[in-house]
Image 1: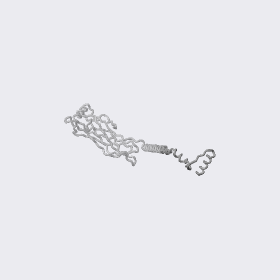
Image 2: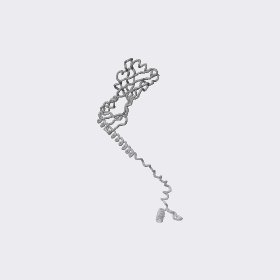
Image 3: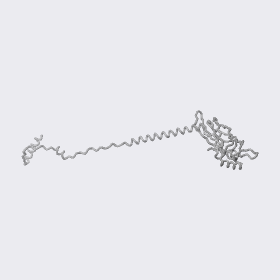
Image 4: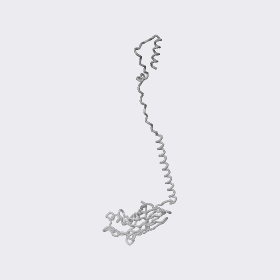
Length: 250
């Protein structure tokens, strides 16, 4: 095909009045090579990192957050209903009350030399359970009788069961024979005897469990301080109690 193309070109040039003699047949013209020689290489295709789909992560977070909120609301509703049922059944729960009553001073004598105390005081512990559907099982009740900072005696009442809406009276007492007092306490006691008013504090400590049907709660501790004022003996007048004891939870 190339030879035929060149023959046609010679014929055309001859007819136009222009002629040229070639020593040899011209080499064919390669358009493809010429184009390729002047053609710059194409840049490599740009590579793009795939974009993260943030919408999926946000949807998962929203689902988890909504689920947690729903669980918290459900738990709060269940706890509220449970508390309401317990309140309706027990309605309401009262802590037991304790008091000291019927104090009787049998003996109260202070010896300035060598600063000793002989005493005997009898009293009654009043335990009141005002709850209609809750029983109380006592582990122990201890009463410490204290003058100023010195402990004079400790009395313990064994454990027992306290029924619903019940008042139980437990007799108790303390006594001392030749109890030595430190010099500072002895001097203060002499001043109180002179004024006819000796203040004592009875510290009641109660450990118990609440019993609700077949359920027994963990141990509770109640602390009550009762103030008792004793009038010491004067001559042939025996010792007595001034007023009534006053008790307060601490």
